[in-house]
Image (cartoon, rainbow, N blue to C red; front, top):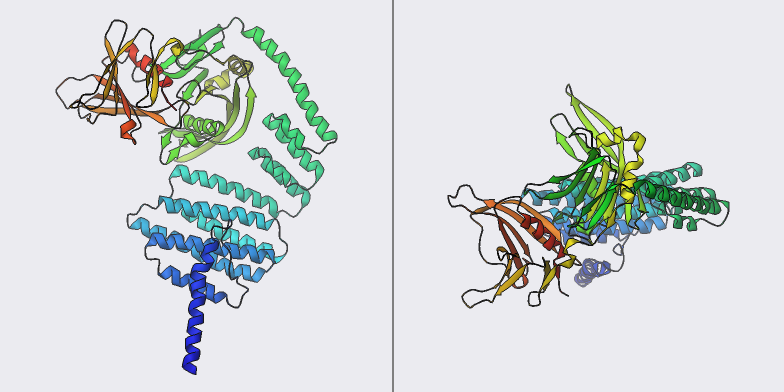
Amino acid sequence: MDRELNKDIKLIFSIIIFLLLFGVAAFAQQSELPDPGLTPDSPFYFFDTLAEKIEMFFSFSPEKKAEKAIYYADEKLAEIEKMAEENKAEPIGRANQNYQKYLELANQKVKEAKEKGKDVKELAILISEKTLKHQKILLEIYGKILGEAKTGIEKVMESSKRGFEEAVKNLSKVKREEFQREEDKIGKEMKCKKIQDLGKQNKCWIDLAKETKEEDYCRNIKTFESRADCYTTLAILKNDSSICEKIERGSIYESCKEYFEIKKQTKIKKQTKIKKQTVDWKTYRNEEYGYEFKYPQEYFLKEVLGIEGTPTGTLLLRKTEAKETEWLIEVFVKGDIIDPLYDTSKMSFIEFAVDRIRAYCAADGPMGSIYCTDVISQEKFINDQGIEGYKIYITEVTKRYQKGKTVTSKRTKGPIFAFDISKQTGLRGIFFQFTELGEESLEKESEILEKIVSTFKFIQKKSADWRTYRNEEYGYEIKYPGEWEYREEIPQPQNFGLKIYFSDAEGKHVLTIQNPIPEIGYESWVIKKTEQIKIQSSKKYLTKMILEPNTEIEEEFNNLIVVIWNKEDWERSGQITLSYKDEKDPNIKILNQMLSTFRFLE
């Protein structure tokens, strides 16, 4: 009898374990968090813990254990969420102990895998993303509950923050800072929610909305007047009259609308005045990138040349009578950064603009460093030519090393004006800003930059009257000068691949296109520089390489510019090669213009 009873108990126990191991996990994809299953207030909760231990035992590698641990941390948070809904403080504490344990285990196993030489980047990102998501969920829970359960949620938040801080240590600096900015934002929201006094809490939300320029924070304000003030403040800061529509109808709504009507009339008068003032200005015209702008008669403009002796896209302006080094205004263009660890092509234009401003701002030296941090304001505007842009102010931090001490100072840098030029060229943005000397010297003429920006407009590029080479087989087309000719060399069995030779008006060979990429090396050259050029109407990029002869080889070779595409799909790939001796060879500039017209056929 006892034996039969023991068999039944073992069978029941095995079924429970089976259900826990396989049944519960089936809910993982049903919602944002897994189904909590048994919760800490259940007398059978130990079955849940036992099942987790068994499954963890059968996860052998550190990576698998880390993945399993973060899944169980998800499940513990689901239990916490359910206990919070039922306002059960003590079970929240029990679940938090297990939650903290699994986060610590996940980070520990990542550390072990890293010590064994494994690539833990994806795992570290997973844990960082999960703990950030957990903090957002906890923030939402905290705003809905009352009593002792709130204290329990605060402790869970602390556990999640510790797990996050440990996980981001294994990320690249750029990725770590990206995650930390997001976590800092959550921390500020939590700070507002913990304030008991309603008036002080409202002020906290308004301050956060002003800092981040995000309207969602205004919705958290419970009183009408404060919420209306929040929306009005953001409407003015963002120069966006549509935000006024989110204010309940009344005197504050009417005041918000009136402000923008007055501003509109003032802007019209100002535009008329600026147009009269700039009518006799000089014009800078860039046909390669397809834009122009005006600048004062008394100013001198210089194009900054690069290593190849061609324009870099950076311009400097100063007063004609000033010294060579006394530049007041700079204009520069920037393209996307395409890298597995950092890809700006996935950013919106304003995100890209701020990112490139920060990069352009950074400088290090033996006596100190300069870098830019928080955006103070970013205002969308449309200039007098109908071109949409952004006016940005950012915090610039300067650190100077003096007598063994670091002296830190901050200042507001701006305005910096940014326009999206991706439809005109392979680059992404053009920026106008004062130099540091310009900000100091032109205090009384602070509108000079705004006047220059008001004249910025797009023009028809020089390549508009060029002819088009179209290749249906390899799926691309590219423009070339109208006076040039090309000759196709049909591939022979012993010479696989198509070659297209382009010659100038005098019949002199200039460059060659080959499809697919030839299987040859460049042992006689050294890659000096590599850059990515965005392809029109595509998410793909051309890879442009500058090669110079290897000095260790006695034979004489020319410099090369090699441009490739579709390297990952060899049969549809291609390569452009330009050989040149003189860095000021005009064909380099023509090639750059040609590359800006390259596009894939649909």
